[in-house]
Image (tube, rainbow, N blue to C red; front, top):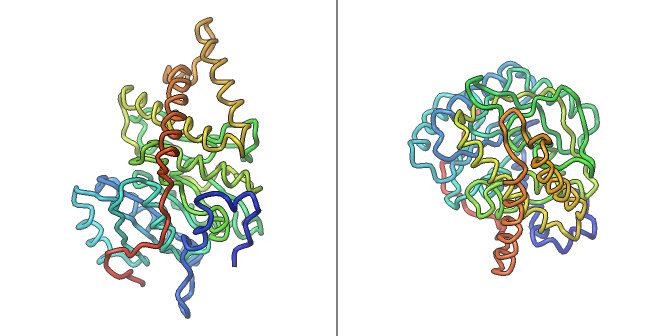
Length: 345
């Protein structure tokens, strides 16, 4: 049974249904140690490689029982047929789900609702898991320190891709108020105990790819955890390789703007509970003005400016205010998922 959430969580519109969003293992059926949760939308070729890497990591550390939960978020590129073929061939326990409502957060909530593992692992469909991933994961979670959100290193999968949406630090760290939570732990490589997920609740479906705020569903989750007193930890192992495929500056600039849009909505959402986020906005404004006097850009290697962050933060805050005024709270409920029964091996 998950511990009762602190009083500050009781008036969160997402909180009352939190426990229903993490599945209980069926009676008499042993729960796996870990559940890989992969959400996908129209990335059939990358998805196949991602699943192969998860299968290889599971075989390399077979003494740790794991399962794979794949959520198809409205794909139209043959993903369903590819997944059916994978399910027929694999020796790994796999559950195939569909979530027709658009949005990464909605898909993650669907996957979390059906995952049976003690440890939940969120991996993006364009990421490949290192062969030692489960060994590293087990070492971290068998040390008794389970009441955390823990993310691992994210390397470029292809050196031809631009160095964005990666985290290559070799130094372990924990989130503090002096560090912006965006990118501290990347959502493409994020893990937690199922009890922690039950305390925090589902992902906010206003955020993330495919949603009105386009990004920051993972950052919102980190902020909610941090404000509940749950540590957020980065470790330099538990490696995934990100094959994001962005090789042109325009694609990186668009993603840069989307991240900033989501973070602006995030800042307004948590204005009363996490006002420390405002100082990061203030630091960004100061850094943006500094660029005019020759100071460094947000990302000197990619020549990304602070100014789009400022403008998109403001736009994101306005968009969140509009969503709140329109009563666009996420509707969190257990939904019947039309799918084949999970195949257990």
